[in-house]
Figure 1 (tube, rainbow, N blue to C red):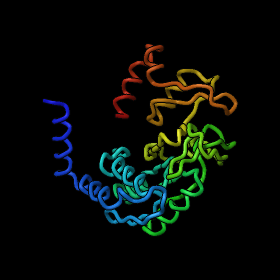
Figure 2: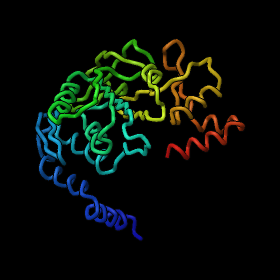
Figure 3: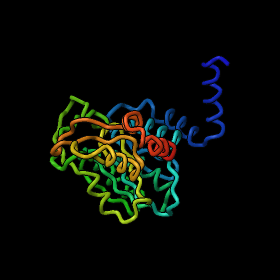
Figure 4: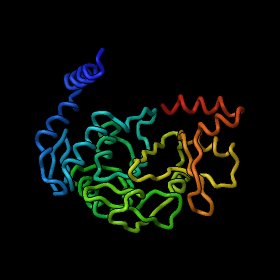
Length: 254
């Protein structure tokens, strides 16, 4: 089948069968031509949000509610979710939509965006959400983030460089009593490692951390500074004895 035709048919099928796909289309028509970087109130599903940029929110809705990037399976009725880069709260709305009894710790380093996050949580009466206006990083010494004109922030952005406070997610994980109920959702924009391993640690220790937290990469730090990255493939290809464990990790986390 022609790839273009196949893509169009797939899109049509999604539009017909997925109510959130139709909602995305409606949001695009209703708000797609709004001026960029202007605050606006948007109603979607059963939520009402204030956002700093309509177009940015529309694509967040598609990624989170239509494509369900953050969907996960859990046996817990009240999972603990670490939302690392919560932005204006679209992901929080999704988690509460899917897992009403969840407890969410929402990290958002951009103070201006965090104001929208606080407002949206309050206006939608979300319960059991703790907002932390800090970045998740390999240390608690703070870091510089670039801020765009909408709602994104990243260590890779050179625009509007700002020093923000930071925390180590590892420190929060260690306080949780039930590791099986913990899920960490880390956005690419924040580029924030959920867990790290010290440079002097063994490969076996790195493998244990990956298995414990069901993650496939680990930042390597030396005295709190990021010096590299180790992935499950690095371990699988270089330590034959750990290949079965890394295969199992891949299966469980996909």
